[in-house]
Amino acid sequence: MTETTARRCAVTALLAATALLYCWNLSINGYGNDFYAAAAQAGGANWKAWLFGSLDAGNVITVDKPPAALWVTGLSVRLFGLSSWSVLLPQALIGVGTVGLVYLTVRRLLGTLEDRIATGGALLAGAVCALTPAAVLIFRFNNPDALLVLLMTAAAYCTVRACQAASWRWLVACGALLGFAFLTKMLQGLLVLPGFGLAYLLFARTSWLQRARDLALGVVAVVVSAGWYVLLTVLWPASSRPYIGGSKDGTFMDLVLGYNGLARIVGNSGGDSGFGGGGGPGGDAATGTSFGGTPSLARLFSNEFGNEISWLLPAALLVLVIGLVLVARRRLERDLALGLTVFGTWLVVTGVVFSYMSGTVHPYYTVALAPAIAVLVGGGAAVAWSRRSTVPGTLALVSLVLAAGGWGIVRAWRAGYAWPVLGIVVGVLTVAAIVALLVTRRGAGRAVAAALVLALLAGGVATAAFSFSTAGTAHTGGVPTAVRTAKSGDMFGGPGGGRAGEAPSDRGATAGLPAGVELPDGARDGGGGPGGQAANAELVALLKGTTTQWAAAVNGAQSQGSLQLNSGRPVIAIGGFSGSDPAPTLAQFQQWVKDGRISYYVASGGFRPGAGTSEIQSWVEKNFTATKVGSATVYELVT
Image (cartoon, rainbow, N blue to C red; front, top):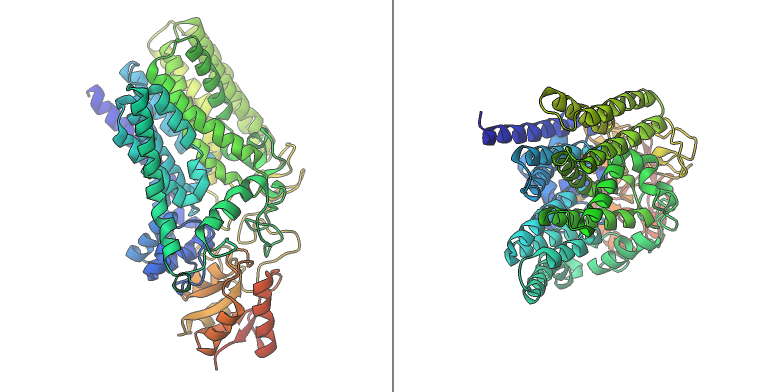
């Protein structure tokens, strides 16, 4: 077998294994996040709903994010029908694509190394990305973060190509990808932009004037690829499009600058929530402590954040520090310094933002760090291995193994349950790997191969174990977490939303709700998808039998998604995600009822509605008669 054939086989095996991990028993997650699944269902039935990301096919209100991720799942639902697989399989394929791009990027950056070492480093980077618990969680789920990570990784690859060839075309491609990243999750998609621009300024082999011109073209590409949709929402008459969910005035830019912009950083949600916190179910947007703890650099290493992303973060930071020292001493090749700049800035800027966000922040956001960590670890390990015959090279390898293995022991010990046993295994492997690396640093053959295997196991077995456990666990609801643990031992409170010293709660349809607050009647269905158990079959059957434009209206989106998915009929989420958006207005709702376009109103139960939602609820309660359908209080609006 030639070296080229062997390399292709290895890459194929990596991608196939990734696909198996991300697709295995995928339907265990049902529809994943009902909120986005319902929007995909609506997009699969109505093109306008698909374009704007509406929650229902009647186009009352959109999700509280841009619609790019829903364009993917909406098309899948339109082509293959609504099912767990049609909603979640695109996310798994996006994950496989991300791993492939990580491999291609690292392979290109390591072009100056021996071919086998460069390929090994690229394969290691791909494996690290694939086996990051946050990646396994999100690439098997339908939150927008999966597409965001793919677009950012593709943009990084284009940046590397642009710098190596001094090509404005690759830079324009990068800009276009980041524009669509903006249309996926707004400003988070642009956190990598400064680092990518800096890399081109420093490493493109052309004049400074040409670099400035090329960067200007890249910025134009960002504006055009994102701006067309912003312009569309401005030019399209508000009366004939859905209300932009999460905004105060129904405009896209208010959503960008408020609820999904500065509010995420400084902690002002810009509106009351039906759950007592802005930005998510149970989220405390004023302090950021409901999910993320006190903002600090320690956040990424603690609790659920630590379980999902931190396993190889110390090793990645170590590579960054060593790389900067080598750059300062001019002992690092140009392409390696380029990679350090692109992915080092990605890791630092995004990591610092996540660490100090005072608004709503969830642990799964950290999947955006996975490609950067993977590239730094894979590339750094390959460079250190290529220099293992030298004392600095050996020390670098030993340090990387110690950082990865040592932190793996700490995380496993903090996880509780049976995980400390994993910590013991990692500890033994780490010691054995360090001894083997020191003994064989000038050797060859099987001894070196054994040292390499031990090093890989020491660094990767802990994160791999958590990833496999994540893949085998059902995830539904709005705030998925990677894997259940028994204790945190950290400063921020227990994982899974618990307080310090408490066991985490199961994540399902009620995840993240404040104590004492329950979902609306009829909404408890374990996630609403095929993997859930609809508790109110009578209500679902009632909605299935309707023929009006909307089968029902409910306060907020927490039960809307479940009812719409299970009944297959459009359901209005009054007030959008949190129930606090001013859509529909009381006058609109009254007119729709008068026109016979809504069959039922389902009462909110323990849900605390916003002002506009309360008006509608009061009007319905005053003018219509309540009946019990299963556990739900229902008002018939048509006669």
